Length: 117
Image (cartoon, rainbow, N blue to C red; front, side, top):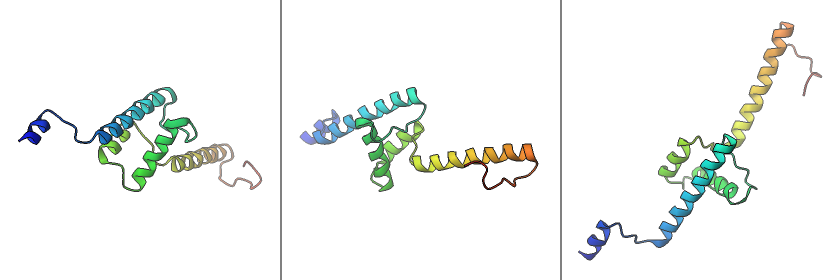
């Protein structure tokens, strides 16, 4: 009966869990501010506590240890789960664009091996 009464008023049975949730929310807000300024959520890992936090979110998700509510919240702001994959895709797209320009200029895709990078 007493436990039920406490539950009805939102009593917290775990101070540690509340502290962790509050800390996560604080970093999430910092990330949204970073995103507003930099257009993405790719905080360098070496950039203080926020960078470490972002890296940790990726690791936790990879290991299946990040709860779905947090995954969803990060997805809502366009969080990138694999920066390396995005960088590789961007590099590929850049080279493809260069090839397209070469093809438009020369009429073929026979780029000399010594041309470009």
